[in-house]
Image (spheres, rainbow, N blue to C red):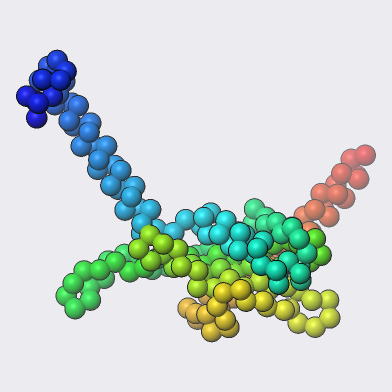
Length: 187
């Protein structure tokens, strides 16, 4: 390789060694980044996918009012991934991301639940549901993708994840009220 490179560019042997070392290091780093992107789930990407799907759904926009906006409050749980042995052959388990976040439309607020599975680098959305609190009666749950069975996967993991987010949403209003009272006392 040194002989081939030397015909095009005048290199010293030491410089050529370090150049090839840098090239091989870059190849390994890019291969690692490619593998990581293929076998992990990015919660920010899942959030953007869900928001795009919600903002293009006529049913959700009709109930909640357009435009829909999310908040910085998000909770997610990753599961799966890693190596496993099936019939004495090593294989990779698929990675799942369970994401929950509040959403606000011009007329109503809601809580979005998402489940995404990474299949060979492609995100497969298994669940996209919106819980909308109703003034009269129980909350209404609208499913864009999936159904009630998908909502209960993992022993009701989404519903377990839902409770702390609901408490945090309620606490946000309480904190805002306390901040307003403190501001009034200062004036």
